[in-house]
Length: 370
Image 1 (cartoon, rainbow, N blue to C red):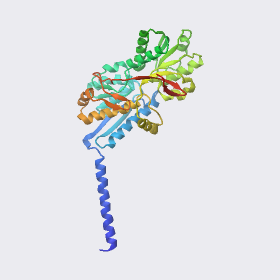
Image 2: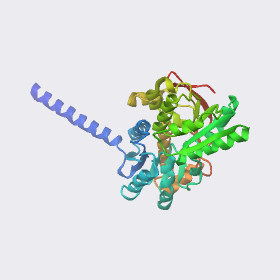
Image 3: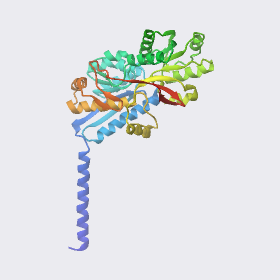
Image 4: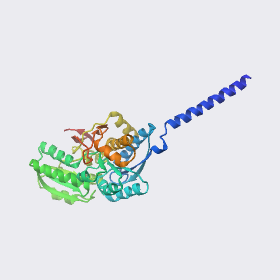
């Protein structure tokens, strides 16, 4: 055998070994076909909350990639735009259930979750709500869970913080949707229980363009602070027009004020505003991944959607793909240590043990002050 022949044979053996190694690696990293799972996602991918929806959808894709890299399950997420309203979320949900045949859906805004819940219940499709805080979600159905706070708790916390800070006379403004209305009515009830007075109340269409008539009516009422519950564009409109009308009254709210787009748009006008939000418990590693992938931060629903995906998959790993089995597991599952906190569910599918903090916007950034 010539030296050249030996070299050719050796090269051939190495090539065959390389192919075998690649094939084995590919097989080991690919989940078996019967472990393919489709999960629907409904979020605000356009409209008022699109800047938040972009970061949330990235968080879900991050969780999905990490799960798939383990090779035990192959998760495919079908993303749909719910635009943070009932009509579009219902359209998206019907598509996911009837056309895509998903058994699990991650849902965002309260109005969408509440609109979809009856259909999900009827079809035994499990909803995991990552940013639905309306009190009505508590009784939305056996197949509806949420890894997010309840506005009954957030409204109560806002009232307590404001009263503790010496505020006694407030104006309450809220948009007519499930989230902001539930939040504000709870706030009003709790603030008045404490002894405060809500001397002005007015509701309006979501993301109202012109707040000037409302602001004008609030003047000369002795209001010490305004509780404002609306989505991003409405909040921006309110602040710009309150400055225009020289109505310089402090503003309080909840996580509706947490969208970075508000501070970016308003600049120093937004400084001094305060809002309550669930206490942040995310790891620095997770924050860095979100920052690297989106340039954004942990706004409303980001850590929760990441946790919601991981909890769903953990349940599937434990009991299989049948939604009823997954549902039953979730009600009794061990506490999950997630990026949004320690998570377990009560008998209504609500998250337990949510703690709140008061944040103030200082130089465009939220700072914990209580």
